[in-house]
Length: 144
Image 1 (tube, helix red, strand yellow):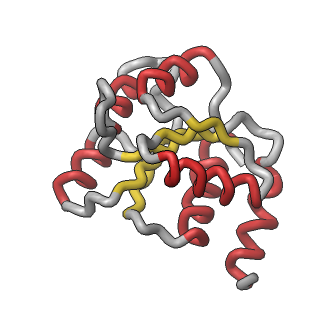
Image 2 (cartoon, rainbow, N blue to C red):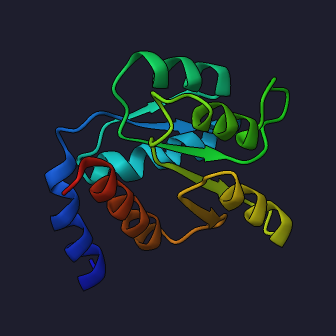
């Protein structure tokens, strides 16, 4: 294990008892990979392929972070719609949202940040970078 990954693991351990990280992607394999990565570091996740379910959970349960794909094939909402809905509700306005997307066009990242995204990573992402960004968002979200 590299020093950076070990350092990140030590810091992520302080978040093992926090509310779950909600994962939203229409690709089951992508969700499973994220689940495995976060479980390896002791973090709890809740995988929901439908953005409507994410909105419901964010409004009714404690959530520490939402990680979502940008585009959802066959879903009523895409990642930007999900973000807009969360940012329009005072109860979920400050909930951190990270995008993971294979769409690396400048327009997409600009729109995501303009609408209130906290982070945007391109697929394929590097796991150490994903963990670093996650740690930063959890620290900010939980005030640690």
